[in-house]
Length: 191
Image (cartoon, rainbow, N blue to C red; front, side, top):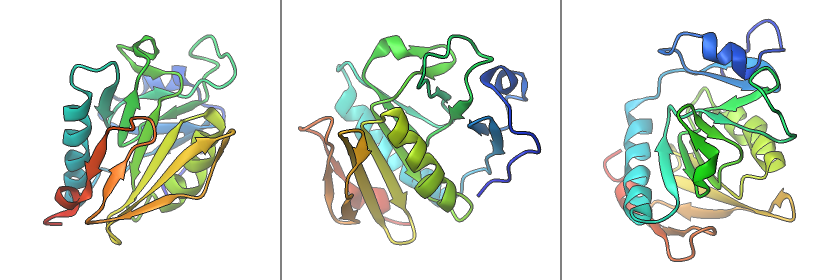
């Protein structure tokens, strides 16, 4: 897990002042610096991204790869100094274009994908899982490169239920897009 910084009251206003070449996230006011992704991570991201992009072409939804800033607005935060949850998911899908501005997404995305790395396991499976669930992210995918599988969590009655688990030769049927099938074979092929 990335190391948190000393103080725990950072906001999106602070985030905007940090060097753009550094990747940071803020969870409940605590800042976490993100490590550069591995080549395997990037290959998986690309394999998923291509399929999402092809499916969403000409549709209302858009897909965004990291680094893409998501300001998780849960309570009615009005300005940059009040926003204390800023994440950079590996893949973000947003169907409501009014949530997207020149800085990223301001609000809750419809679908988020996180690709586990040795340093992000606790953050992705525990911390972000709980934050995404509480914020109301409709669908959360956790990709595990070592096991070559994907856990898909769907929000029902404000809680993520038991995940659907997909292996490397499966096709994922997205809950938010009933006619979308993500083929995992090309995603994990060659890694």
